[in-house]
Each structure stands twice: as structure tokens, then as C-alpha cells.
Image 1: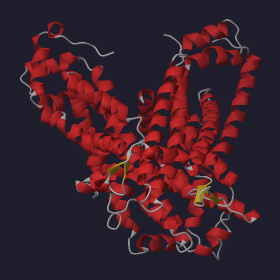
Image 2: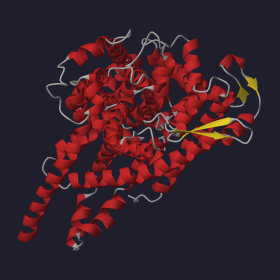
Image 3: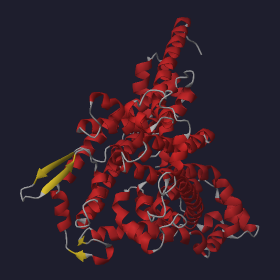
Image 4: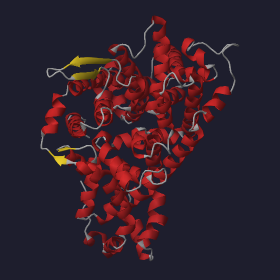
Length: 287
Length: 310
């Protein structure tokens, strides 16, 4: 590449300046999380009056907030965390398995019924949750789908659209010959799926899985309306519940809980960053 | 377009596989379809039906025709929340896309630390709306308390608070899409522009942006629908406060929650005021659905037609 030497130097300098500017912006960006961290170690009364100052000798309480937050009230936070994990893992697993199977079937069989279901799935992507929230929660109630162990069915039903759409897009690009070869070798459809198709779907599985995890882990309204609220809460429901009783709740302890609910997410993000960013890009290109 | 696969082209085995598969429909198709029927199709149809009924619960519905729709449109709070949401969506659309594009553009110019910045800017997307709303309400109140006020005291604080929150969360997401788009701009086109002596600015306008139309389509569409559907952040940050009470012509007291967006308004109509007006709430939900669907379709159509033909 030919470039004038003068411009190269100038370019270099402007790049350094940009790095400096972006470093400042990045610091501003993480500031809200930083505020949560410092307040998680402060005594209740200081959270409101000295939100932005570091914990001092007076206000510092060590890990008291975490211990208090975890055991606080008649519904310990640890239970909410466990239910969040159960719901997210079960739902994501169920969605990945069932929608990929269905997408493969619909794309390969391609009958009129299949096309009908496929278009309904695509249509469901533009329907906002408020449209169905009342009837959905009543239906879930009637069918006993209101526990953390059964709510995955609801997630599968309401979240099928995007997953089916993404899987179908990928199945189209798989050459039919591979599956034919398996069929000639005497492989039935179920074995073909698990031994031939599923391994090929892996990259899409990861993308879809990431999108579903991000959605379900953070989802508030659906579990809030569907779950039996007295026996089951998830992290977002618990946080909202604490905020609803503003003032009567220990703010320092709440900050500690918020920090505890962010930590798993940040760890997950740093571990699978590459997949997450790829998944988001893939989901967006198709969605 | 779907490829048509005839038995002739693929030979007998394609048919073999398809016939074998058809017998296993209950393994492959049934689980997803049954859940889809329970989790989407039935609630959706029932929702449409109930919007024409007077009801407090699904079992005591009584058909009343389109009365609910008149009640919904006549509700000042609903109309207010529509305009509030529309204004919010317009501001958020412009701000988020400009910022996200600018950030993505700079990060693809090979500056040092680009990966680290990308990591940081995307991070807020993994935190849920309720938690985000709570974090920002502490932050805003921490600042506003110095002026003896709170985010719950004034509509404009709530509005800009929501905008800041939404930007903080969404810029990183849109940035990822813009980065993917920028990386897909053909290098030879950029090279050709450079050869022809095009400056950085005209290359951006004439080459990069036209090639970026797919990404711009997706991002405008996503920011717009995300704004219209915003709920968690709205509930956690302001909850609709401050409230204004207004006496209607018939002497009834109307409550207008001045930072309440559409989704929250529908939620409050369902679950907030006892269960008297659930028919109207469901009618609002149907109108909301139509609005979101129309935006999605229009947006896709208008921006698609401006995409570069390849």
C-alpha cells in the first residue's frame, strides 16, 4: 500500500488520540457498575446520602450486606437465583432441541402443513408480549405450567419463532446428500438427526442458545405473570419486589444483591464473549 | 424463495428420507407445535376474541362488540402514552444509531484497544431491564438529590433518564451489528475509491454507507420496535411517575402517568385498576400489536428498497 509518509504519521497520532478518547468513554460506561460495587459495601443510610463516594471508615460494612441480602425477608435471594438457573437452563435446552428438530422436519418434508406452521412462527416474532400476556398466563395456570419445572414449555411456545427461523435458515444450507447417504446406510430419521444433522447445527445452536439465555435470564414479565408468585421468584422478580418496597428495604443489601445478580452474567459474558457477539450478529442479520 | 425439491432431481433417496421422516412427525414436529399452540396460537386467538368482550377473567367473558376499542381510544392516558412512546422512539432511534455507527466506525479503523472497547460497550446488554432500571434510578437520584429533587418528580427527568438508559444499553448492541456490516464492505470497492482520489468523507458517504444499508435497516428496525416495546426499564426506572390527576367531562378522575409508555399503560390497565376494564386493556393490547406489526413491515419495506443491489 502506498501512502504519503506525512499522512501516516498524522494518522498514527490521530489514532492514539482516539484511543485516549475512547478510554475515557469506556470508563464512563462502566461507571454505573462501579457505583453498584462501591455501594454494595456501604451501610444502608450512606447509599442515599453519599452515592458516589467510596466507602469510608464509617460507612464500610464489609460483606455484611451480602450476608443480610442473601437471607433477607421470608424469601431468601439464593432461592430466586436457583430458580433463575433452573428456568434458564431447562428452557434453553428444550427450545434448542425441539425447535431444531421441528425446523429440520419442516424444511425437509416441506408439506403445506409445515409451511403453515413455519409462517405462523415467523409471524409470532412481530407479536409483542402484551398482546398475549393475560390469556397466556391464564392458559399456563390452567395447564399447570406455572412452576419452574414446567414453565419451559411456555418459553418454548412463545420463543419458538426466532429459533425456528434461524434453524430453518441454516438447514436450507445443508446439502441433502449427507442425509441421503445416512438413509442409504440404513439410518432412521431419529438417528440421522442426532448423529448427522445435530452436529452440523452446532454453530447455529450456540447462536440461538446465547440469544435465548440472554432473553430468559433477564425476562421479568413472563415469569412474573405465569409463575405462582408466592412460591417461586426469579432474580428480576426479586429485584423488582425489593424496589417496590422502596424505603423499607435495606439499600446496601439491595446493592449487594444487584452485584450478585450481575456477577454471573459478567462471568458468562467474559467466558463466551466470542460466541455471544457472533450470536447477536447472526440473530440480527436474520431477525 | 424455497427451493422445490422433486423426487426426480434428488433421486429416489430424497423421497425415501422424506417418507421415513413423515412417519416420525410426532417426534420432530409435535413437541414444538404443541408448545407453540399453547404458548402462542391459542393465547393470541383468545386475546383477539376477548378484546370484543367484557370480562374480568377468561371464564366470564360476555361479547360486547367493538365497545372496548372506543373505550381504549377514548382513554386519555393511553393516547398520552402513545405520544410519549412515539417521541421517545424517535429520539432514541436517532441517538442510538448515530452513536452506535460512530463507535463502530472508529473501532473498525484499527485503533488500539478496539476489542476491549467493544467488550465494554456491549456489556450492558447482558444485564436485565429491571436491574438496569434500578441501577440507574440510584444513579439519577444520587445526582438529582443534590438539587433536592428526584427522577420521579418531573416528566422531563424521566424522559431523558429513559433515553440515557436506553442509549447505554442499546448502543453496544447496534454497534455489534454495524461492525459486522462495516467488515463486510468489499475491500476492493474501498480500494477503488482510494485510487480514484476519494477523501475519507466522500468514501464514507458514497461507498461505505450504501453498502451498509442492510445493517442500517436492521438497526433502525430493532431500535424502533425495542423502544415501542420497552417495559422493564420503564417500570423499574420511573414506574410512570410523576402522576397527574385530571377531572374528566363526566366527573371521573383520570390519572395520567406522565412517563408511562404504551406497554406499561396496557399492563396497568390489566392489573392496576382492579379488574373492571380488562376488555379495554385487551383492546389496547390488540391495537398495540397492530402498531408494532405495521411498523415492522413498513420499516423493512422502505429500507429494503434502498439497499444496494448485489
